[in-house]
Image 1 (cartoon, one colour):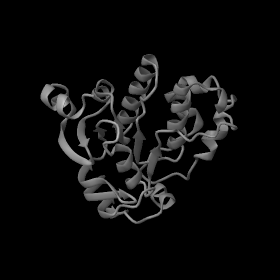
Image 2: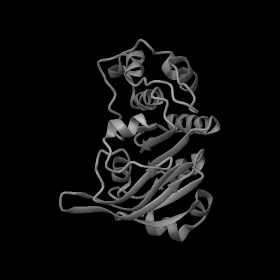
Image 3: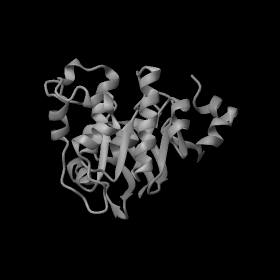
Length: 233
């Protein structure tokens, strides 16, 4: 469904991504792992058109999307949950969901407020609450729920477990598993290998903007040398 080929990306004179290639198949959950500053968030921003690649190609569902505007990429069926969530704190939960609503897509499940409330029961209990009055974990759930209201075919999640309490991380893992069971394709960036191993099928490891490791998440979890080389602090 998603393919990156020889992707290079820069911030000014800083060369952040170098020759990054990866694939995400329909229905897969794939994780992009790496230390802080490895280029994980830059990869997701490049896919969404928020940081136009310097060179290389990005294909989504067989069509080339590098060079397109972010809103055009979103309309093709890519949903993006940024690391800083970007929810509207002066709006209620229900109002945030309405902001994210897009038209129904062919061959894509239709998301409604009641359906996202079933996925995130915590949100159902606070549907009329201002987002400013929510905890960090609740705001993360709302950010994902709002993106789902756009009926994405592929969901990009940037560091979904960062800064969350263990009980919320466990809820997040169950929610991603439920999304996969419903056929949604997910690419997430993460530093938390334990969380990633609960939700992902395959992993790519970035170090200094280059892919250094790829394989089944179980292989990485059982490879102490790779974990020490690319993930330890």
